Image (tube, rainbow, N blue to C red; front, top):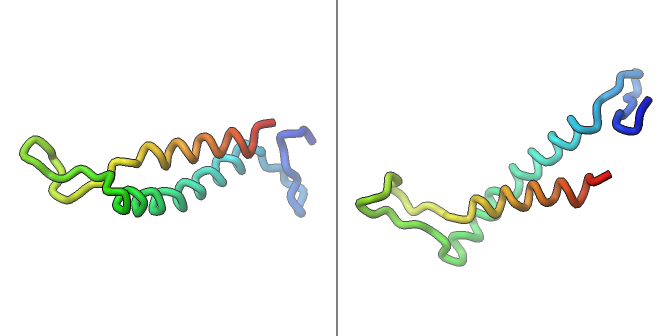
Amino acid sequence: MGIHHLKLKDGAEINLQIWIMIICFLIGILIIPLVRKFAFYINAVDEPRERHIHTKITPTLGGLAIFFRVYGRYVTFSC
């Protein structure tokens, strides 16, 4: 059993990288709605105009949620 594998009760091994991807995905699912609410709170939104495709007010901080997810992965799981 290597350092990058976890052993389950039934003897099966799961690659640590798979767990990291699952955890980061779940963190992203939780962070995105919070960042969206924060964008509306600080008025970081893009309003529809004639040159835009969207028809509703759209928050513009989506990259911030992705940054937190990726940065969190490196801080938490850097081995």
